[in-house]
Image 1 (cartoon, helix red, strand yellow):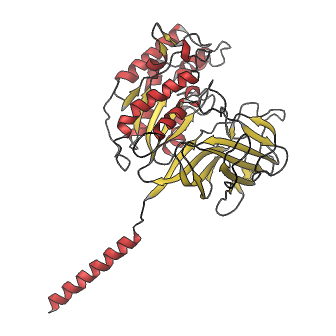
Image 2 (cartoon, one colour; image 1 turned 60 degrees about the horizontal axis):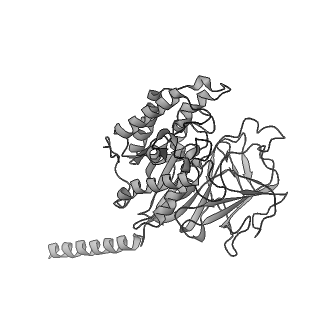
Length: 433
């Protein structure tokens, strides 16, 4: 009788535990995924001058336009004061679906809060996340992020090459204005470093880490025609779980020396590992390490590096990413024959680095951007149809070709993604085209 009673009690306990587990399990697991990003940069050297256009803002509103990759119904916004000389106060911030110019679409304006407060002071060197807001954001939609700076900010942490018009107001808070009156414009983003959406656990992100060629130099203003934009467009139309694309390119960036933003090794943790649920990394860095020391005024002559130095830096990036379970795609350096800092020795370095990228096995796969964009008859130069005219940066057609090549290399692996981030691996095997 006692044994029977114990058995009944045990079964009753199991039934209660099962009911509790079912009640506690969410219907659909969700997590935050970055859908847009821009790498923070330090202000220019002359920004502290009162007459500099980069001296900051005072009692002004700035409205910045960004295009997301994946969509969602719940979002939050990141602001960075990584390179501020002091704390900066955000008096108010709003997000909305962007309309034409400085306008927003009716009914989409949402006030952002920070721990429930409409204003927030970002400490020097810090980053802040807004509270989440409900807004139905379709894939590839453009958002308007408006920020009111009530007091003098000093030089701003920014992303210099936005390739997108930013609208700057006369004195006053216009964050909720349907069509913000702008007295001037810029082509940069200020303090704005990311947008995240709440998404299914099956969805993850790709970071593209690079220099001006990833940042979209020479592409058409306000056209979203950087090669990561093309990649995002193609991924949206594919079957299977969406993949977000986070563009962490900085114009002028280098692997081993600071110049326009911190060097790639220094910014790796913030721009790659700190992003939400990154599963892929595409690296296209190094052409400025080769070229900057040969700029005619000799300002950077002391920064010369060898192909072996660059290879060591690229290997560091690959191994650090692999340690976090991120698959790494190595991009070959594109041609620069005829560019203002091209030299025969520099071309030899580029070819040596590309040979290593293609054959070393350090990367999970190779994205041969050099092969895609070069002139077959003059492989040290761009195909004329892809040359922006400076012989260093592609034009819109060249970026289109790079984006298409990236998605072709990525999609076979992406279609077979597991529903969770892979376990870190000690050794990765090369797959080249």
